[in-house]
Length: 116
Image 1 (cartoon, rainbow, N blue to C red):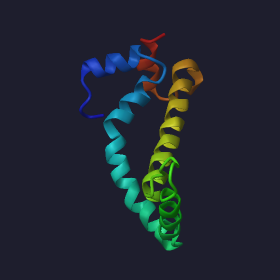
Image 2 (cartoon, rainbow, N blue to C red):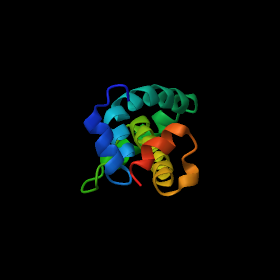
Image 3 (cartoon, rainbow, N blue to C red):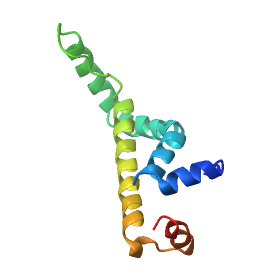
Image 4 (tube, helix red, strand yellow):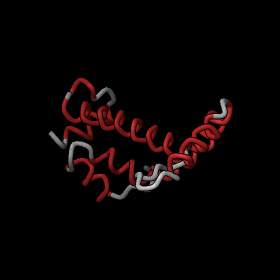
């Protein structure tokens, strides 16, 4: 957010109803993934889930003519967690853009007054 330009702010403010979410996704996804994955690996390893999943997927992937599945469970879990996170952010953004009562700070009121 510190690196936002005036053009970024204008595009977010006047853009689609999920413009801020898309901006955050584009600017933070890789860093968030990098933070999430070690935590996911640690948690999944506690129960042996990575090994069990990997064994099962490798057997499945060896079947001819099937659509191959990603054997990296931690990767899959991280991707789905981030989809969920950005979905929640998008939902909150939509509320802020469309419902005046969700603009709970002076900054939100001031910024989104220009959109109205």
